[in-house]
Length: 279
Image 1 (cartoon, rainbow, N blue to C red):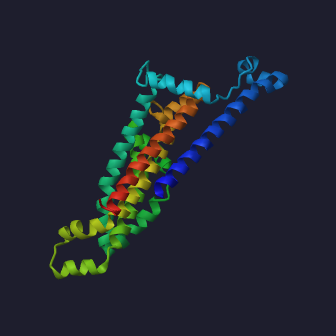
Image 2: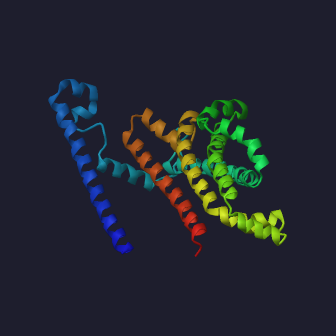
Image 3: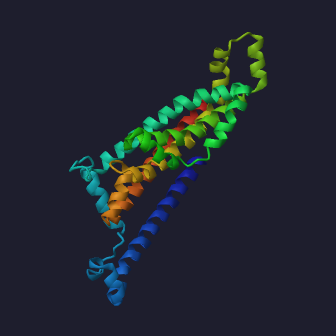
């Protein structure tokens, strides 16, 4: 039954995609005709109007652009002309470093908060004060103190990844069933062993949920951060292509950003299923 439902859903998704691409191609094909009939519109659109071609790329143009990037994704022609693969690698590396640092800080701190009511009360005001601050608001301070665009972007990823993991870890640890902890105390199980053998397995689904939320936020924020700091990265690539008025490359970048974000989310979703329903 589930396989049949999955097959029908995939078929429906394919139909929707084909319909969307067809409408998109027809819509951009009609812009050139409109421009030819309207002199003012033609003057605004420039060369694309005089050739009867839309300034907005269609699916065929996007496919050609994607193929061009796939043929040589790692070219390097200077500071402002690097392949999409290189730009993507910079962004993934920054997210990976910032995200890993956030894990190292957030999960142990979350355990401390969840297991100690005193630490929970003591740290809660700081968490509530800093958590609502937009990660990008930290960028000017990071650039001034760190004085390196790449490291500043990593710091922003660290900040934005920290809070979901910290809060979810604390909640999962604090929600561990009391009777399990009472049995451990009766058996005189030490705090460290109790944390690893009882609390961690019980809190694991909630911790991985926080990690999944964090990776989505981190990937979203890195694009905006790289637009601000420039230099390298998929965010900078999008902004640079916009400055060059290359809409085909902008749309291609959007598709790549969405694809990578989906892959990262699915990896954490798989981990979440494993800790919730061990195989």
